[in-house]
Image 1 (cartoon, rainbow, N blue to C red):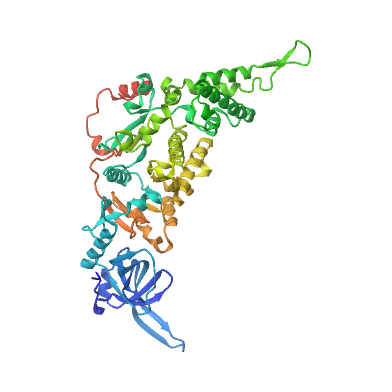
Image 2: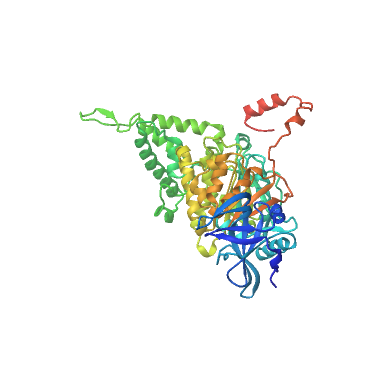
Length: 577
């Protein structure tokens, strides 16, 4: 039975003008005009039977004293002209095959001139919202909250399309971005074999506790000293996992005039060090096919010994018994010094001080099982929250992208029939997915990896959820590949502009509400949402540590003893106790 049974006398007005996606309605009743609100919904009669067009009210206008001049040049004083501009956003079908009341985000027709227009409110609005919910509901569904237009109607999203087409979650500080992310993680944790990695840069998702959620942290100096392992929830990301390009960016100073020679020597010697490791371990099959980028361990001491030898190498000279300096004599000094500094930096212990375990050939399988495995594979949890808070900011893009590259490589080399999808939730994405013109060499490597995932990840069952408070600073390629947007309040005009440009032309005005959204309220647009919607996000069971402090209240409380002494001590020890 059709949900819309409007009577002609209930009409808001009649269609006066039509273009591709916009309709102008002449509102006859001024009292009805007063009730209209921008961004609310309207229903228009379609030119096809059994269909109604759904539109979004974008402008309400009341004009008085307009002089209308007809073709004969005769002036006619029009007392009043009440207009309503509506952006068409979809079609409601009374029947589609065996299904009744189906909403499609396509325009199969446009209204005719003088077609009736009705305001969608009251029971009609409730029925429409419930119809939307039941269309996308079914089984264990993805829900964020309730529609602002109708608080009784649950806002369901299509979970498949949300992750298939990549998603963006954005909003100014304090707008509820982390809250929304926590709500999505909570929904995912209810699925039996959910598989996701959350890049938690500040440890704010630590309060999220569930049998389906496992917490890891990248090893800090104290963890290295305590010899913590992956079983303790501590991750090491050894140097040999880095690609050749990443190693070069880390150890070779591009401004050095010897940089090309250093890079060439680095490639050759890493290849030889990996070959020696494989020969010593009798891994004959891998020896035939490995490359400098293959994830094969190698001993850093062996590499350093070779580099030092080449740097001071003397070769036979022209005269008998005489020696001369080799081709690379002294040219590797800066690279060796740079490498030694990195190795001795305790902050980088997660890369260089993992002990003998990380040089074991089976270590990579243990790592991927723990970090990339679903609950059935790792015996623990499918959703892994990785805390990067102790990773130095200068290498952060490199390290975050390393985890992403391992994920992509594993998915790429898994036979298609064995592949299990995985989502990467990238919090504070602007820190490691910056615009190209703001990127340095380490950022470039990070961008290359994430851009490839954004473009090709869907083929290999990898989804990106990009989360940032500054959309204008996030790489444009990444955003252009996102087909779902959950946008919280945005104050900055540049950030608002980014979201506006990504919306369809017919919905450009919808984004004008971005600066006025309440905390915990979001504008949801995209393939996963049947209707561009303003949604009030439900409260997650476990709230993240958003870091919001009530300054005025705190300044009226007693300050805790020895807080600065403890802070300085922790700073020196590089460990929070």
